[in-house]
Image (tube, rainbow, N blue to C red; front, side, top):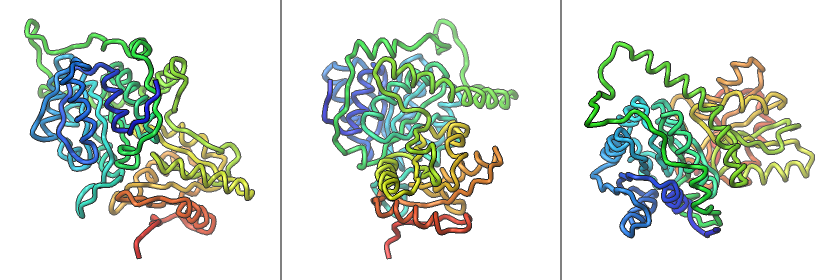
Length: 381
């Protein structure tokens, strides 16, 4: 069944299709409509789940942790400052190896105050032990939520699905909502795992001198996630006819210059790449879908034949630069290929990244002899 819906609604329909059992959330713009719709599903009985109204995002994650420890399939959604307020408990969720799925509607962090898209909120949580996906369309949002439950319940690691505020969250487009029978075949009830049981008391997250062992095991399973997520994506394609990969490439095979980015900027980059090809300029586009664990090998392979790489970040780490750019540089340094990487900061606070901006980035990349500091695109004069 196809519906014209927003990406926020796509999240809600996906959680309905996944048959989540416990939902805990606190409203925050531009996420609020996700949990409003889910509360309606619960109120009408369309979704047989416990909806918990909490007093903060910190409490929302605490409730999800408690429900997940009891074995329930759980979900929450947040944005920006709400995600920042969850920070302490994100570590608990991953450390306890709980398969929680969360949608984060990317929004700039204060101050100054801004309600629009900026990936810095989720990227500032990159070391919390959560898998992170960055989506480009409402369809991808729906499909990634469904995939995330399979991934998290196998690896016992929480998953964060990110979508840009307003650019995706409030934009309506056609989304294919598969039949529930198809979803059920792909996503059966969660497999049995160690949970709290009043008849068999045990302790979760107790003090231990073996802390380093637990962290090492988490890292091993994060590395395994790259292979497993690819397998789930391939299985998803067999059932539903769509796949996304850990990264996606466009015209990269013979490209001299490859634009690397994440989220919705990739679509504009592909349009500009087509224009460049018509002029005889070999430009390709690589979109990073999975950020944690970072798929360095999958990113480096398409880049190796290029002459230059321009990374466009809708985020910024003060005193460091674009976060995706730093990760790409580190991965390329690991294979010692000497490929020049140029950093561009664009679209912070939801500022439009236009085709003209992308053309300027390509022009500057061709001209720049060095690759030191970040170049800022779209500054208000």
